[in-house]
Image 1 (spheres, rainbow, N blue to C red):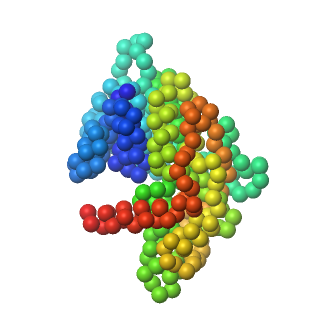
Image 2: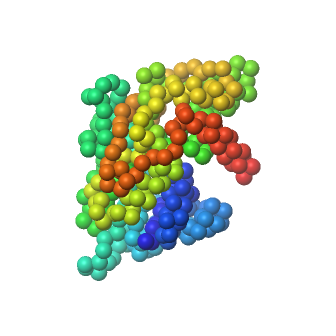
Length: 313
């Protein structure tokens, strides 16, 4: 297959692009940076497309190439529906295939917080077969892009809703926990402030496991049209267990709660109770990486190594 990845140098995009390369596919990836193209994409056999994906000129550049591909995956960071919809419509505008030609597969990357129902019993539990919820205000825009992708007649539209991703440089866990712990470890008190609730349970997924799901779904795109997959480990973890593990590996002595500010931090401490199964049922996908708590020694060391690399750039 020819695969086009929007956001190929990102935390999710690069592992996904590498997974497709290893599987023998031809992979194109966008980046805004000539340096990233030369240092991250080309050396890993990913064909760089240097363009701002949102600018008029950039849309022309990547749109023409994406229209010739069998799979297009949107892994760009989006803070609202408009930018994601613009990306999807740009691809459709460039799509010009003869009648009867195979349809391309379009995969939109969404998030699990649109399924969150909060902490509780079975009434709060969810999976791919459950409807979305209105629990988290920060992500109520997600269906505005998910529905057009899933219902489009021009593509085999699929949505992958990712849990909170860990591994490598840490992603959200770095900004919410690891960075604060690292700073505190260099102080006399060795106590870090963080947004948490004692009842919060986190649904998470390693970036490599999510990359494997992208690959499996993309290769089966024509028979998965209209499906929504949840990229999450089989079990959630208590946020305080994650924090305790960070205290152990960082040299800190503890942590203190600070109140959430804004809808995104409220979403961070909301509980998503989930046990996904559709990825396994339809593609044989099962996460293989150690959980965040169990593998914290590995993930903390990886975070530190990646931080040192960034600091020397």
